[in-house]
Length: 197
Image (cartoon, rainbow, N blue to C red):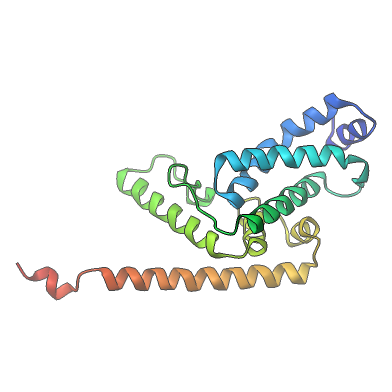
């Protein structure tokens, strides 16, 4: 059964059809919430809340629109509201974000694994410093591979606003990365000092 058929049946009151939609999208929605909120329990709650809101608002969904984008919109807005209420964002060190799939290798060695953990922690730290709206755009684009048009639809903004937000976020991330590498260079021992015994 196609997605549009499932949605049509769910809108007609078929709870089983909606359950199939939840099963289809629970992982991407959870991943979005986890990358936005940084904590597994909060992400689970946010994903569940997303599907509860989607079910309650299913009558408002327009069949011509991407259902996936509509769900991402609900999840993204919920997470942004949650972040605004939270004020301080603490990412769990016990449950770091997985690196972007492009960084994955089939069998990384111990040094690669250590480097990847450091990169993941750096990405977490940098994402944490972005505004919730910019963080949402970055995650939707680079982790969920949404187009500019889909992000605009999910965030109720224009394509040019999305491009501007992503440009600003990339510039912020580049500055943070530059400052991080400059700080690491300043704390590294001077080469001449390393030669002294």
